[in-house]
Image: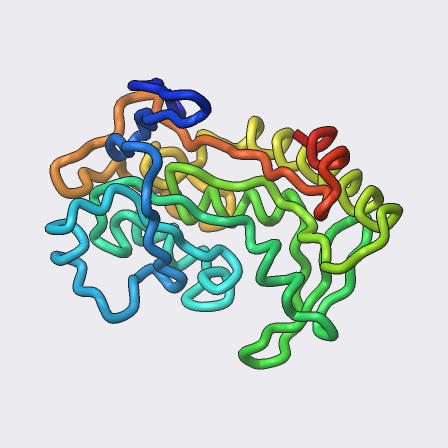
Length: 231
């Protein structure tokens, strides 16, 4: 099982539901606190659990740079690294990379960029973004996309949206080939040489055969037609 979604009730276009992940259920709509560097700043971990927070957001770009995907993966993934027993979602790092402006260059292959920390050179591709997120081990991961700048001409928005679709296909292809390498599956991950156990996180143990869920991202700028085509 990667993820299940059940609609609980609806009124008009509004609805409530449940996301069922490998690390617990998430009631929707949901408030998802941002834990950029694997912690929610200013909020103790036990308070997050006491407040009933069901899912946290981690940032792939920042975790990739520090402490590094390999470190997190060798420690059993984000759930063990954070001592967080519930669901986690990671973004692909695309937005942060594209916010670097002069520090990055986009091509069909991916995005070459320099770290905002030390100026070191890196390359994010759909494949490397998937590899990083598989190594981090969140329940829900995002396809690598280009975040279109605003304002932009329609031709530019279409070009960007089409690039995102091609990157989405590459992301999905890599994910399908490597999804069993998530740290909590007990399968050896290519980035490390180490074999991880299937850890019990809090009182939850992912079910046998559980895997991450890959979400696509709608692009197309502010053009409704392009966004509909993207979806």
